[in-house]
Image (tube, rainbow, N blue to C red; front, side):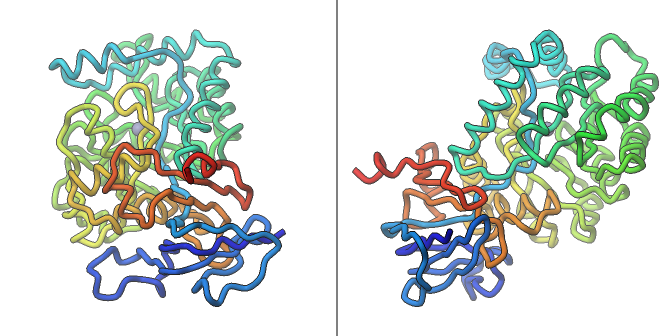
Length: 402
Ligand SMILES: [Zn+2]
């Protein structure tokens, strides 16, 4: 089964050979105008000028809209129960965010049934898909004991291959100040219970969470169990998180809000992606990370939502793109690249985040003529259709076309 999507005003492929020469755009962003795309089964078979498109079993007229790779959201916490809207309202009224707020979600999550948690995860996954996110990562971290962390990664694995074991989110209240005892649990029986469902190991290395030595221990134990490190680094203040991530060979250091010059240099000279989560700064009224400093140094930058009930309760990659452009000085091309190919790099995936032959057919049809509209029209739903693995899974065109 093949599908030709034609009459595409702008086809964002992110292929280097389609890069906008002399446009001052992101190094990796690439697009074609007046283009077409052929999907064959679950993969992209062809892309190029619409006038040269080969025949296909089915033809979709994009009507002069833009086509992009589905978004890759490389940082999300979707397995949770409870409601923290009152905390958000209080914070907006002047109370600062502290990592300890996670404990409220932990007690609600432990008290929830499997069915309640599963329904919540599926609702969030559906919400993401309807907004054009075709690949997402999902962390544990609201169970914080062996059975509840195991349940969290098991439920996450039902909706994504990109499951992250985040037993080291915070020290749960029952451990008091005994961080060492909790780290032993995270590196021992909890890891053994969670590793079979997980691809990644993560640690919140920040003030109020875990220090450098504790984070190193968690990542080393995870690596020994076959998991690949990623790190919550430098969200709440300067600290060792980025250095720990780079030393551990982490796929990504996430947040990167407070970076030293050494942190920036380490990210630029390593394979560790700097994943920026501007919706967290938006929702906690913190300063945004300095994207231009990272890009100027040559670091690879990804954008993700950090979707979680405490500090960033949004699943909108379009919002992250708009914030990155408006508040962090990224170009529209850089932001869209960071939300697609950048996210794929942060997950060490080469099959998603671009639309070139052989890529997975994860395709976003915007109800707009170019990627610029994602930042130009913030807050406006602009998803006309989404294909995932070549299958049309979202289609709002009947209403969008009126
Ligand atoms: Zn996070």
